[in-house]
Length: 351
Image (cartoon, rainbow, N blue to C red; front, side):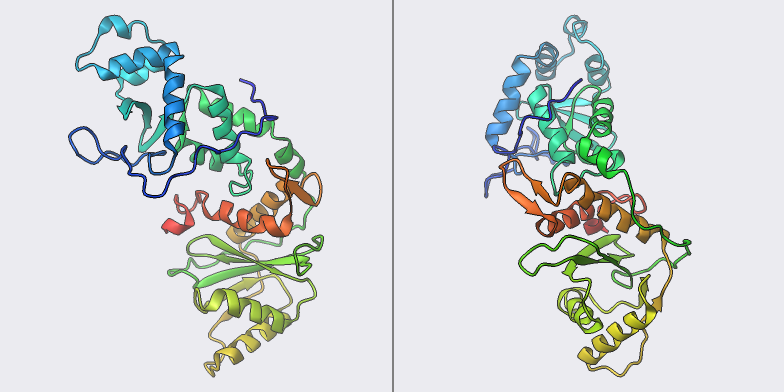
């Protein structure tokens, strides 16, 4: 099914209203229902009403609604259902909550959509938005699966991503080649082991004309922090950057992995420990080597940014506003930190 990418679908009627009760969290008997991919507390009631109206115009949904509203099964009505609707109904994979059809797949429950405009909206919001990051098919699939369901959605999602112009253009990688991968002992606590890498060679952007950013990767949670900086920053500048953004919100790491000049890094940590007024020597160990998982993460971050700047140094959003890479960076960080990580099976904030 072809998706019209030219339409500027937005969640204009989608944001939640503060204080809106989550009427979809309990069933008619007052018992707690499974966690929903989309609930009343997250979406505006107008969106739900619009989705319900689309059911009335869809033949299969109309039949399914009648079947789900009945107390007893009706073989005559069931015979009017087509696949996959019939199979899902017989397998008890579909059910009603507040007049909306939800579909269950293993431990995931998502809202059923049949309107092409809303399906296009879901695909765009789960893949194209800056805070989604034009992620890979697997990561986008995890987002869509917990949000919405429609027949053959996985096949359609695959086609959508494979024809994404920004992804295709950004996939032509010409970045640096990383060294040999070495095994790093798995950390047991957050911020115990970190990876650092500088992304440089960027066009100056933002009020301070930053031309680089420092990526700090937490090896335990698999989360990232992106700190704006300059390629010309001294070791003291970097120490201050780490002091102001990491130390008091996280902690002092025990193991640091990086690929920059060891002398530079040693000077950074000398300055940092001076700020801490500690004489505990350097219990922090520096490893000038490569870590496969961290290098993959760094490459992913660079790829996300490249997707939005694939057509120039600025990105234009749906409202016509332009953003340089500096203003996009927080969204890129959010996109990575809210995506499912293969090694943990969770998003970083849940680890």
